Length: 234
Image (cartoon, rainbow, N blue to C red; front, top):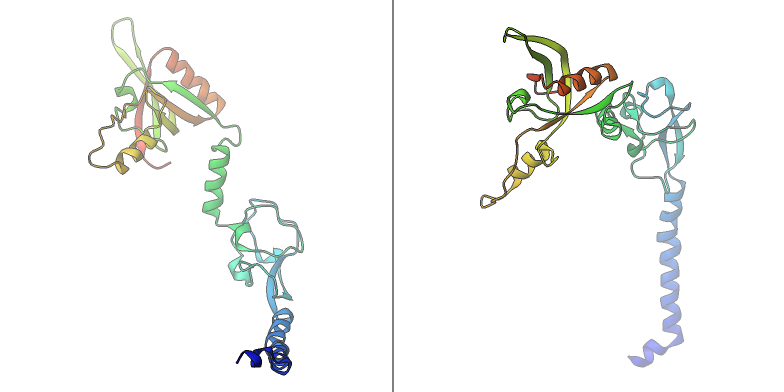
């Protein structure tokens, strides 16, 4: 048996079999894969990030399938109505990672900019009392109305609505911890968790215009700020 494996004729025959397998089986498949084509979606013009894509911006062209990304878009129907997650340039192919739904794009932009577009800003106020901040109910994302409560010389009180439908960006405790984050930790804690979760609202952060910020700051300075809950979904 050892002599057989050392035989030049045997080794040569093995090499011929391997060469035949490569020539008649592997190479045809390899070249077939290289020559295969697929229809891919391309943009016909530059498309800025954040643009909703329409059929007028698209064309379908044939391209070699070999080496194409697995997530390349092959149907215009899958693209129309999506939002460009980044700037797309004329002639480029499209794939899933470069497209988003409108809802996802808005959410990602809000997370990136904190919603501070078109002159919006964030302002932090210290609540004059627990009751003024709707006790322990107030959370980020809620919509509130803002009232001013002032005491007259005759000891009576005057109450007036100053701002409507204000968006609460976040609510913090005395340690500047977000109540939403603390609540999530508390909900995910084990039954034997002894952590004291301080969910008392002390500071509230509003997303607002500069004029609204001036009103809020004034109310904080005179300690006459009161909030009423209008909606739990911003």
